[in-house]
Length: 391
Picture 1: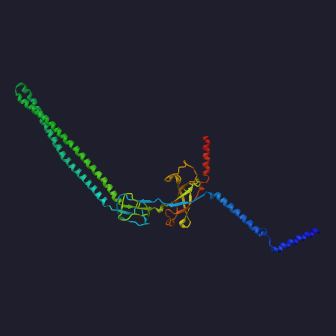
Picture 2: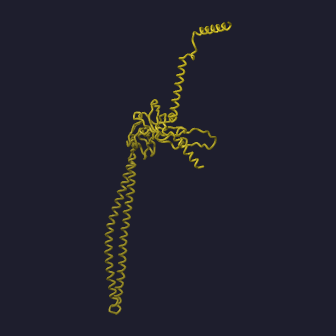
């Protein structure tokens, strides 16, 4: 009886508690709530499994960095010659074509130099013609000297014959010795005259050689003047400064009437058709990075619009190695810092996007390194085999 009385009291207390709670059960004990929680946990597990699978198969191979900027190999426009600027033929931010004139420098000084060298060429030609005329006269003198030499040789033979004919007569007394001495003296004079004519002929022939040397000298002077004239023509042509490749004019500082020295920076032509991205990746990100891999580029100026590209090349050193003062870690305390390696990304954007893209814009680059999957393992195996072989 006592037990039944206690049970009835517990039921009355429970009923009173239920009536005080308004007849509601706890939320976690409700079947519908428990089903929703179970479904939520299952969905979370499935999504987590999908994310983990995607990360293991693809996500971890997508290397990205926001330390990236659009760049271009800008061409600095500078004159080759000095002078006063006669005209500036382009305006700020103007698109130019290859070969289009940009600046013209006063060419009068260089034109006068060209005319001076042309006059020197004419003088050298005139000197050569004068020497050629002298050679013609000298050739006539040589012919005359040869004729005189022949005449002298004939006189010498005759005088020698006469002396030889009178020698036995003088010995027998048929002729006087004085006559023989005269003939013998005439023969000696004839031989001397032959020697003199022969020397005169040789001198005349050598004179021609000297004149030939003068012609060669005049020709050399003409060639030197021609080379100077060619250089002067180059300088005259250099007074008109032209664009070496198509692009857009920027940083124009030249003004009409300004005196410019050779090599003075006048403006910059930026080849917008050859834009590229320099992305600075951490050294831990480039292990699988190879030229030719596909890249996705988010441009801040286009509200995060993605454009395509590909890896063109990887720098042969970290950015710190090419700085003006490379770090020297062998002195003092050392703190290891993750280095960054510049990677050149070629832009494959369309023409509409290129109208907006200019050097210096910030971008975010993501490179798909999945095609190089497994190369690190291959490298590790190769080095391990080399290490084992060296033991």
